Image (cartoon, rainbow, N blue to C red):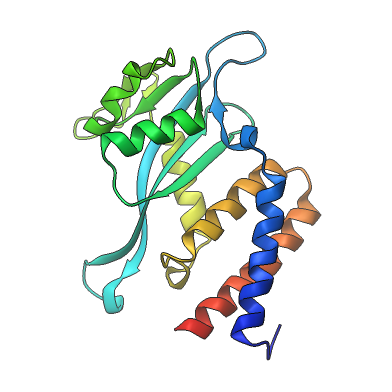
Length: 204
């Protein structure tokens, strides 16, 4: 890819992105519901900000908010949505689109989550007050918190620009779906990572 024009890099990256999107069916991103024994699945939902320091200094963090969810199952199915705000309407829409009926949902005490029990989805909502504790019995958001860390540790600050975050999240979901195909996942992830790095470099 060395010597490729910015246009060629962008178009190739779009092609790879399209391949990943086509492979990810709706049920790959709709999580929770019931397991094979009929037990409700626990889903943890949280928000995290992806960004980089303004001018690489100080405490001002520019970037985008992402709402994410992950199952407490061996598969760890997950979803991520870039959002413009974190109000009740946004959270309700995300829950309708990405959480299956009958799930047990764990969140922090952010008020925008409170209306989910009124959506007619037979959801059980349990909260943990992070200003007091990070675990209240078996109620916590440690799984999604760990998932955020797993995503961000492999993402350099330069890639946390608004235009790059959706690509990175789709790639993460796709890799998790195909985690048993180590060679294929590694190969495609490497290609996408190189393309993203080139795209960022050419736009800085």
